[in-house]
Length: 442
Image 1 (cartoon, rainbow, N blue to C red):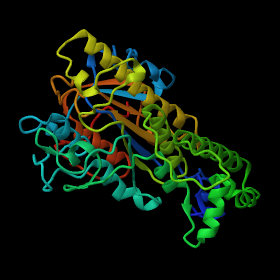
Image 2: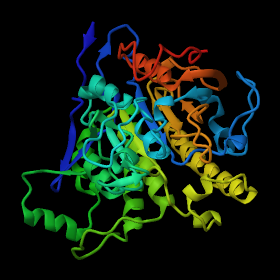
Image 3: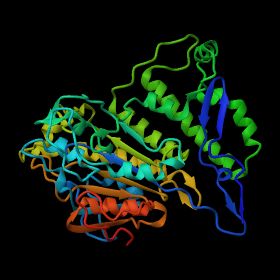
Image 4: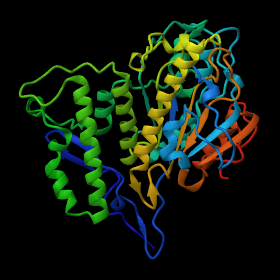
């Protein structure tokens, strides 16, 4: 027999004109008398990085469980047993008509559908697999999906050899002609997720809250204290961990924007341009959004196609895209290795944060699948075969990580078919796929 949950999944904390969502607590999940608890929900996250990877320093030695970390993958050491390295998967629909490899492949990154080459508004590709998933499971959460990124990019015009800018700037597509725009402001994403204002608040009350510089948690503290009295020990611990995470992220966002506590009203600050701070803030947002069960599907773009970012903090003076066209020059190889290593470190940070969140009979990472890749392999040759792919987490027991699995000439879309099946979406075809990918469960 099932018993009703103590709290509604839609429970919000209220105070000082703020509404704050709660993490997924045990008291929100229906229990089963004399039976096993309800399994934690599964989540899916995508980490996209542009311009390819320097593959000689990426590909691990050994296959199966006996694989070794390469210099590029070294930061994965603490989570090595939580990661699958998948080699030999191809995304041939990413090949362009003529030039335009980066934009064409980015548009096909999650759709595995060839894009129509156009600079106009008549863009056409395919629905991305994250949006197929969001349509299937998104009704269970406040946000069907969450799209985040670092760079906004142009919305119109030519962004890569005759390919329109939406192809280069988006990996999430709700339909063939409908990219899902990403949020590139940590402040805006934070407030959207955790600090929705009560529509009934007066302007005077809102001005008072801002003037006092109250944090979200300060605003809802009284309601939070009342709630804690109704919770068990485990839920009180989870709530405390969640508040700590939200407060730390809030402080980081405020510090990034120069918007600390103030005794007077301030104008809306400008977001930081420091990619290091911005990326960590976005990773923390993903963790908290999953922990709060605000969404179960999230995509993140570390940059747009043909990224021209200069990684000066790595001691580099050239642009990423320029380095990716290495022309077999050792100096360019060395620069790419530094960039690739830093990118994987950001992914490793996300995984370790998720691994640190206890949930049900495991961790947030145990119940998730976290995908990392780029639109091409070698950026100089614009290779659409043997893509650099990592898949972390156990997806509630459906994945068996800690291995390097080698394939040969297998469509990337087969991986997406398998992932959709794992999340309960009974598709048999997707993109140019030929069927589910074997070997993910060991």
